[in-house]
Picture 1 (cartoon, rainbow, N blue to C red):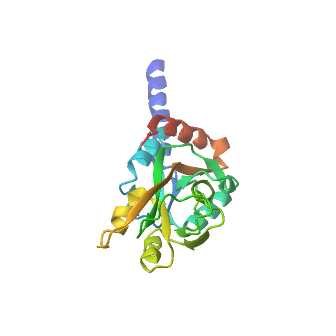
Picture 2 (cartoon, rainbow, N blue to C red):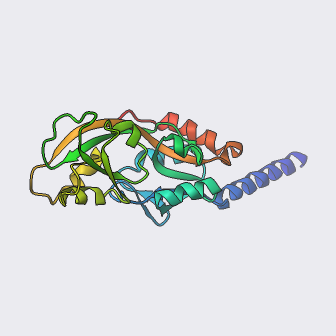
Picture 3 (cartoon, rainbow, N blue to C red):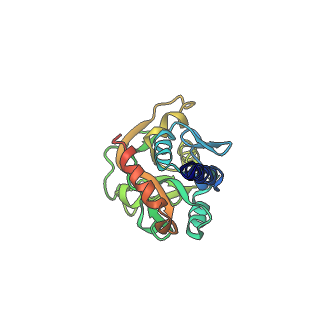
Length: 227
């Protein structure tokens, strides 16, 4: 009888733990707006062509997550305040390290210079003008001409439009976005490889103590891709 009571008590503890896990508030993940073809949110779930490696990471942690769309600047602010737990997709940039901890390289993104005329190899002192996303972390890494004139936009989709309007010579943009943004453009356009950057997410600093940071970084190691 004593053993039966112990067994029933153990079952009760397991059931209580399972319920706590099931009904625990989910971690909040901010998904940066501007690339709906790659990342979007539907009913609190991450969707889009770029989402599978992130699903792998979050599933590996065994934790619950909910996803919300948010502008990049606001997502970093909320991360710094600890009101969101993770923000994605992001490349590492020293100025962002003050907001949270980088999760490691989950996958890589190739960037290109997109132009409507052949520019030849883009070197230093090219004398060209460029368009790129505001707060783009790859600016210092990829743009070889530090004296170039640079125009910034709030959404990736706005960059090719400025190019089509003749307001700049080239757009520095992820290669994966080019085909969709130029789908309706009937004239020739050109791409020149600019570089490759590792991408994942940033994690709120408070999770250094909770264990979530360690879980996420371990999951990145498990789910990381070379492509």
